[in-house]
Image (cartoon, rainbow, N blue to C red; front, side, top):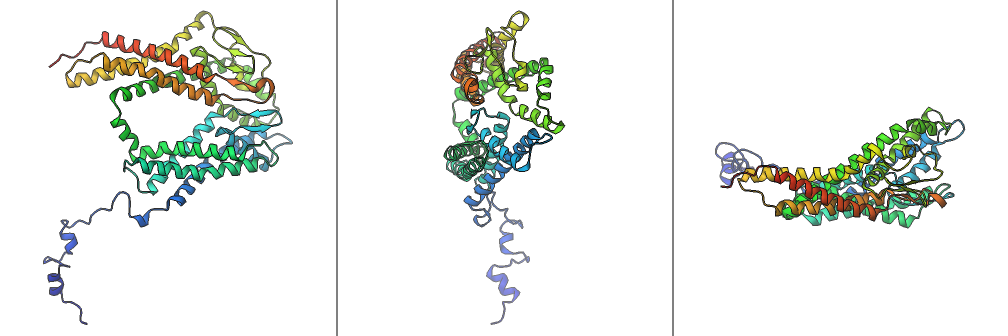
Length: 430
């Protein structure tokens, strides 16, 4: 069978009269770009993508823990690679909120700096799995939930394995508890990343009423301002008691590497100190052991463990100029209300319409419960036992922090928004 001549090929539609392929002529000489999601053949299987993403998130959050705890164990006659790896597993489990059983009692005080690293890596895992599914920008809640669930299922076996290995001569943890906790943490954090990359978060924000959007934004701003104030107060307290902290570190009698490890372990608990300090400014305070209290009106503590972060505890009730710190939570709420009012006034000015009181005061009132939930969750995550007996209770009481934050932020945001609206000239109506 003889091949077609150029004329026959042209008449059959494969090549046009000017010599270009018919498919390119139909598109003006341009080859259509591939779809953003890629072809099904180019996508990785969901199980493989989730397993690789979960394993990567686990390794990148575990290795720093093993290195830091390995440094903390170094001394002239102690410390080993196996011991550092096992201690890293125990610390890694603790960072996920898995309690440990030790000879000194239960250990459940999670280092929140490690927890933040874990959540960030799992959020990125949710992003990677969503991209592998071809769900980027699809705005599909089902795909976002599928990606998050796959990461959670892939992350759970790592928790079980870590609990089994850490039990071999070190602090013990329940494999079942570890597996369930890792699955929940993995799925929850991955859902945040999947919702963002798929566009589901933007979709929910668009469909939510303005009252909810503005209230959540204002509440988060107020909560972050409270945490910033807590961080500043905690840093100032530790700096003031820097001599005591240095003496505590020197008492461990380790080398330079060991002291560096102890400092890094202390920094891992710096977010806990920030939340405790914010609770102190709010009023409920926190405990550093059973039957103890650290509040602005009362400081009742006994013998404390040699922990550098505890060197900055107040010596007594707040008085004098220090009492001015009590106004910080209210000022944080007022600042959030001021920012809310400024934004709504600017939007009203663009539309040449006056700003009504309802759309302003409604979100300011909603900001209180939003900030309360945020601070309450963080307070619960920052607390836990540091052993048995007297150290069985460490940190603030979550419901007290949530209740006080709700009331203070709501009052401050309403006051700040109302004052800004009152003393700002409204735009002229059309």
